[in-house]
Length: 316
Image (cartoon, rainbow, N blue to C red; front, side, top):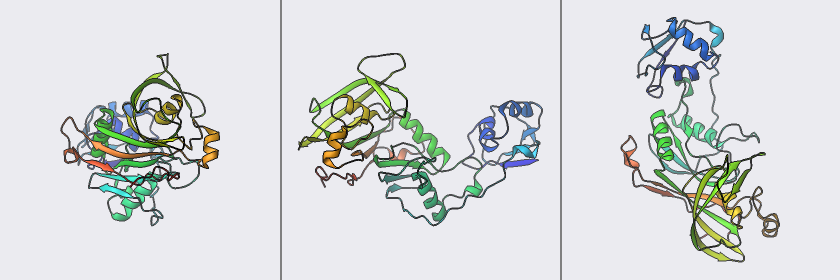
């Protein structure tokens, strides 16, 4: 028999959702069967699949030990890299990601990812202990490509994670980017619409008209400066699709300088720049409904360090 005591981060979940994460070796078919047979109980009583869990609830599982993973205590060494913190409170942390750092787990180069760095920082600060969590760990809310620098939000608890993710979906957190483009975009200011589809080899394809399988993208841009056949461009993402800025600016004929996937290779070589000059430099919180993070409403966070290798347009 195995028991789980529901803590604050685990509360507010359906019973089946919690158990799918807490006991991943247990097939869903058996999970539902064991709930029906009362071999899984909440507070000693029969439970329902959709029963919402509250802090302090005790889940008892009368099932074979083979379904339970051997607990591997996650160990965190003293952080080699201290995240560049733009803002932090008890619910969230906003950091300025350096180029070359993967955001999520599964880095192919074996280096610590941004979430690894954040977890180690919070562990040594005493704000995160994996041994005390059944299903939750701090998580990044907005994704940036490995070679894109800029502001990333991470949630310290499950409630904050749910709210930030919802507000991003509802476009209540505005993200603004700076980039250096090869050439000059067609207009000084424009709101451009196109259609994007994920393709092979981690590339996307863009067309200017609706087609089957393509999703609408909207990109707003302003040219801030132009010189030496380069343009400093501010970009507001109305939609947020994979590689949207890089692919859309390339589609407009002014690819991001240093971009190896969608860029102008000869121009990159002439400039000696081989990492896309793109930074998510500003976050603005514009909430339309109440929540636990109301105190952030109206706040703007920005970094002046764009991490551009090319200093042509680095303005303080």
